[in-house]
Length: 447
Ligand code: PLP
Image 1 (spheres, protein in one colour):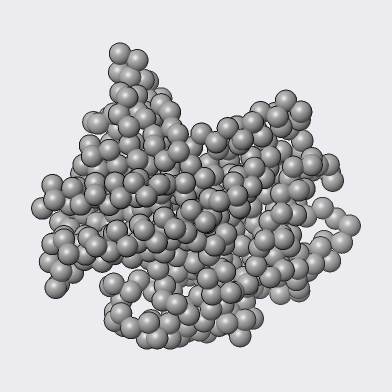
Image 2: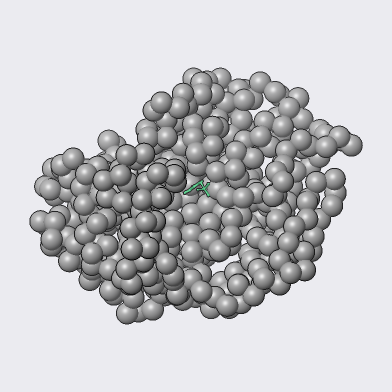
């Protein structure tokens, strides 16, 4: 009864993010009630393995008492302190220092916000300010990668390259440009790593040339493209793109909103190829979804240029909830959990997940299996030879999601017929095996 009335209230009043305004009228919202470890329970008492860690964010898993305690203690002591006017609180200061110590290279300066979208938006503003401070305000053009996702603020949605975030919204703006993705399974240059890398470098150079190299401010990449369908670049790709940006004299931004905090193995995915971006955006695993928080990490030269450009004036960017002490206290505790064993477990289980999903390649519907660590995708096709996508992939995506749900598994089902996985790093062997077994069942039911 309670559920029915909730479904009705939801229909009438709650505007869901990235959802059809009509879709939930037909099916009704699914209400989750509680969660522990990697398992969530819905309002009907059904237990499901959360193979997607909420929205690729609950990296530590649900129900850690120490995290809850850290939030409660901070709320009791000091629930809020602004960072404006050089005020502050202990937790965000300590968190900034801990992140600076662990981040690649000299990404030593941390600006905290509320999530990934505003981290990206903030980074765009800092980059514009940086080029003004360097006396090159005409560097106001930004390049990102097709099939990329960089959030859904007005500016970020235009760096995003997924049509649903553009159509009807008047983005991308004319200062936002794209180069093709490295997407190996369906790449016009073929699957060869070296060919993909040199095509991407050539595309970046050509795009910069077209725009006017002296006009380009920055290039944005995800170390692994997430919402575009978990697209893993060939080894060497990100280093080659970083080097190309250095040669072109443009800033290189790694959007690690999904990939940071153990999702692909190390704390940051940039470590995989030992690259150091000029700026990095993070969110999600930073607080493991317990409370909202995102961050922009800036390298020394970016920070110092902005500082010198502003002089004694305030750099006019910030939110009421920037550097929120409760979020920071949670993030500090989550970081302890990662380093107290969760990263190690995530690496072990990531290998198990990749191995388990790879074994699905024999299934008639599976065209491609890809991923790294606890981030993976299975791309479905109706004809392996021709790589024919599932018919009406959008509807198929909903059906696949529903079928997985019936099997007690939450995964992400992308519109292009791709199943996405990002389980919590706390998963046990048995849970990883169940994710794979249940996926096979879903595929068998879809045949
Ligand atoms: N950047 C990337 C790479 C993301 O995957 C996301 C969200 O999935 C964002 C930015 C936006 O983050 P948020 O949803 O926290 O605003």
